[in-house]
Image (cartoon, rainbow, N blue to C red; front, side, top):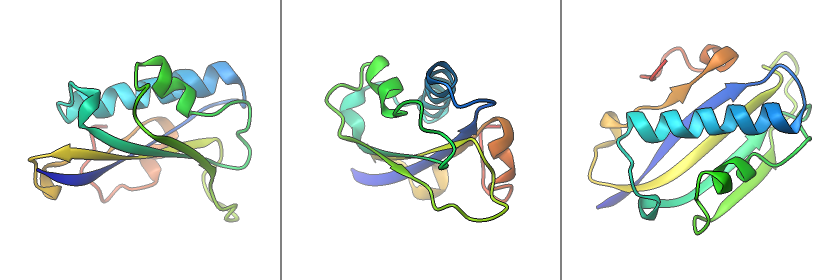
Length: 123
């Protein structure tokens, strides 16, 4: 078994706790579903970032709400690049898996589909 990275991103319409948690839950659930991850023991860690305009809560709260209580989680702020997508939540999951890197499905939802049109995604 090896550790692979799974990327994902989504966006919200407003900087509110409810919007951030709901969008993050939706993103995590889709990543888990399309990559057939059924046990949180397979998750090594997760890094969440938000654009600087999102600070109403930590996206990791959504992961805890899903039951990822023993998974190490970290939140950080994205670099404020002029012209970049705003109101964006990103995640990088580190997962123990037998899959090859090319078999991993990265997930981009809502306005975040614009970020990586070149990647295989569960859009």
